[in-house]
Image (tube, rainbow, N blue to C red; front, side):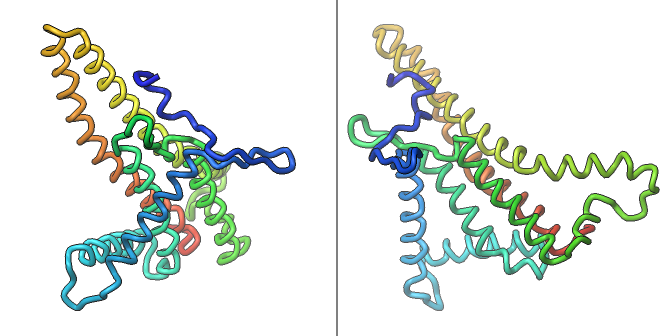
Length: 255
């Protein structure tokens, strides 16, 4: 089980509970979501507690994180998109914590880390939330004029017969592409880490020349771990910036 690369993605029930035929058990995935929410909240509250004119390192980092997301919203949605900052900031932190917490080493029989963003049900729910948000607020802000999103201006009627179905399809598959990108990257990266770690463990267990051969996959794993750290941050950024681009449709239809 320890060398099974798929076992790390298994959802296990920690507290069994069901109601009206639905399984509402508290799982390891839910536990790490709570850990991510509590850890990020405590960090931001602690960092901004003093609100010093000359910030310390924690306050400077939290302010940099705030400005980073604020700049992302401003550059991709516009000045009228400031209302979406709390949503994008929360979304960015949720995805980032999910990506990073899963990279923490597990302690056998004590704690097993879990990457909740490696499950399509989680990334799909986040992407579907953005999709519904764009649709609802698009019609709320623009009314039926929101449908002109699928008819680019200046295109001849004959061409629109081809373009409109393509635009509608591209709009409807946004949740799938947004969620699959994050899910696939997190699962693939963690699989590779586990596979190389398994190779290293098996070779080291052989003794003799296996001790030397086991160092090769170990060095690869160190490089992959560094790369996975970069991917974890990058995927959170991509998820947030694509959400900003989609939310721009609620502010400016043709951009």
